Image (cartoon, rainbow, N blue to C red; front, side, top):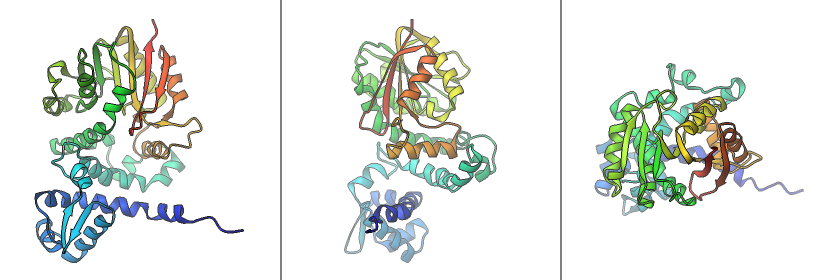
Length: 338
């Protein structure tokens, strides 16, 4: 019997090398330096505080991955790198990449312990009380970097999430834990009568206002500070939660959904943006990997459509419908039971 093709196994063996190559180049600011002007390895080494020969290998690795061009010894950014790996790009994922390198990479190194013992690995890896979120809100610079990364991720999904269902019947939206407001912006730009409120931590509000100010819908979007587990929630006809429920266990999710149900106006609904697992929980691969990511990072996990339906119906919602968006996040819409 002929042995199976080993290419997929070999690819998985090497996958972390590709990630770490990109992570390191972003952490060193190489794409930002090349955004200013193309340069040789020697020139970049002088500007980045690195050694020319090792740096050249890193640059060559980035070129092999399609992130850089090289011509006559001079490196330059590809369009892909310019759009997603430079800090100056409005679609930058650089903040999320730095977060992945600084936090997720070492946490995933303890995946075996998480599987054996259960629970997130934050204290084991970093020796600090609190959570991943406390760490990334610890300073203004860290907060800005984290929010910038989440904003870049949000831009990949929010337009699709607000488009996959017709939300024109809802005039008021509360974007719960809305961060920089990318979902509220996408909704208000698509639905001209909608007014939105971004409800998030006090230290997120000012960065959110700055992002929102660039939108033509800015006059219809407000920001309110609060803790969505404890503080009163604003009344609205539509609530949205993007990448919120996957951070928490079923009990915390159920409590939050009950609070949202109580805050909704008659005829209201909740829109959830998360990665949806297939019913057998063995795919898509991106959702399965994200569920493992939640294992090492938080007390949460990714869920199937039926699992979200059970949580929503227990909280009083009806007519639950899930739709794949083709973007990184899928969407679920459920209506308030009268």
